[in-house]
Length: 218
Ligand SMILES: O=C(CO)[C@H](O)[C@H](O)COP(=O)(O)O
Image (cartoon, rainbow, N blue to C red; front, top):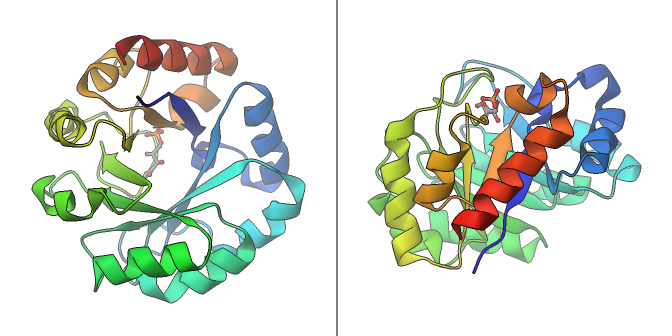
């Protein structure tokens, strides 16, 4: 059985106060801190890289769930390991050798995650899902926060959950109180959310609602 893990996306936080934002999210009930790494090539946006993770690491004990939206994930394994990332999640669409990369991430002491874009079929991930710690099913086109949740991606989550009952399945993009039940029913248990948490008047209530909805669906 899997349990809910709520991962606020710091992309929606104040980058000038990143360490404070991380501690604030943990104090409000977050399990993971989701860090969106974008290279301006795999996605049309630039955010942060290993130097920021390294600067942040001494200021938080939170689990740094790093989602690399980059064209050459192989280049960054050592940098992220040395920076103190807890989980290194890369995209199946660009990895040169998925299995070898998973092994390298584990060798460097990080958990490994495999991400798929909305247009990528879940069947492509089956071969590797038993080797990783988490599969991330994107529910928006990666690149920007604040986009609308793509409900059609839930079929992929359902298929994955049927085959891998104990796998951590993360969903990312447009998750909000209005659609959390759909994601929970499909079998997602790790919820990334930026806008709906950071813009809420009471973020702790959104986090609590996500957790309750996911755990009740298990
Ligand atoms: O990976 C991402 C964008 O590529 C973000 O994590 C994601 O979009 C979360 O933001 P929001 O909840 O506002 O959609």
